[in-house]
Amino acid sequence: MSCNCKKALQIEEKYGVEIKETFLQKCYRSLWKIFILMLGVVMGIVAVPVVIFILIFNQIFRGGKGLVFPEKLSKYIN
Image (cartoon, rainbow, N blue to C red; front, top):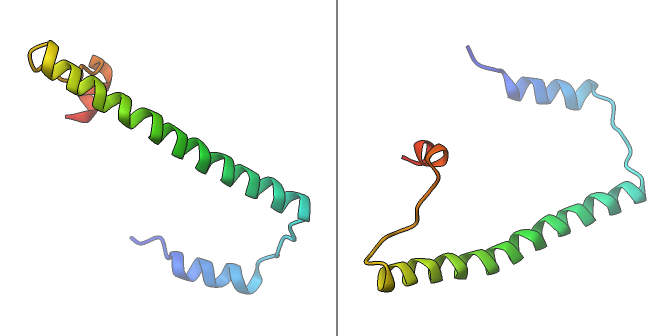
């Protein structure tokens, strides 16, 4: 049984009520998008080198021991 999404979108476009967005709401939404994007970029720039450094350190000084994940998290990864 399908969800009939295309038909639902057509009905919504035809009979739905359009909600006007104020300038303040558009600014708020845009600022959140920019904030989330910047947070992702900064976390990527910081997290990736740290993980690479940890992996290299473990390979050189700990005899090839990789990253150790918590047991609760590792059951979802495998």
